[in-house]
Image (tube, rainbow, N blue to C red; front, side, top):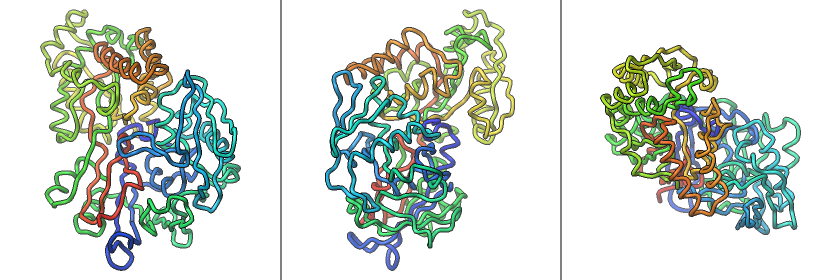
Length: 506
């Protein structure tokens, strides 16, 4: 992501472990909670949300900073420091009414003067949240409890992105200079206790009791311990050393066998991006019949069952099943049919096939590459792999005409449009578009809710028919496993649950 958790590597770099033990130092019933211990697999790369891509930093930021909006577990915008919102007629001005009398975690009285410096800092930052505020031109403050966001064009994804992480509020003084490189400036439910923190190993947070919404965070203390081994994390929850982990689909069977609670949800589009749709480097790809042949040639349902162990949903479309553009009826469009693939290739003039250069990133895609290579070869498409290092995965998108991704999708389908369809998207390196795509994107951007939904479904159908992609599945990369002491709700469209959604079970 460059949006937050963009590729499959994100699924392996932002797992966490959660623990709140009973007795001293732990949970002993409602109202008497003490410590929640979280184990994270990555260290925070920055304390400044404006320079972050989210991912493993998300739970750090949720502990430390307040936001204008939040997202419900279902992925809908909900009040935070802003209590209500409305658009003007053409949806280019968003008016937010702010919470009166709210105190931030550091004791600062919140008002509209804090909003503009923070939003513009994010917009002008170097992190992934900057793209989420690309439509923002200026922020005006009619009074202390009102702000207006003036946009260059309507942006249906704006409210979602503000709740996802585009609206963290920090003290304006902290936004100047490089102070946030080494330490946070907390405004949220917790502060970093530097006396109990060992950078790179363990981070300790204490509750800010003066914070306006302190009641929504039952734990008095948090500890984030860096843990890197998948097996160790699962063993920790199985042995009740910890209460819960956010893990991977590979852990689910063992967790269920141990009697643990498991929740998972589809999060990522998995499959091939046929980037060179104009045939600039591989002329065959300019023919829609060739792109459709690729869809018929690869057994997406089989890959989901054998490699992903069935943890996901077979699909032919890139949008999230919870999004308004998703249309279940499209999922039967490309059943596995090598004979049909050969017919299409022959009709397009490629009876003898052609060679397709692709990046091989074995540490990420090693289980998948031999499978789709063999299946494409069976219809005459010869994949020629070149080894690429994981660190160069983003660069490889523009270097190869077709590439594999596991890409996070969102409940708000227009977010996916910006991340996968727009000419500035990382996974649209050839900047593909056509009049039909653009007209439907425009309708999604500027229409009413009903018009956006209708346009989104038409766009999804058109992309499936034109085979811009070869989706295999929407896979479950949002997985949480717990024992009986913690209850939680997964966050739609997010790899990790919201911190406020993790609470004692009693």
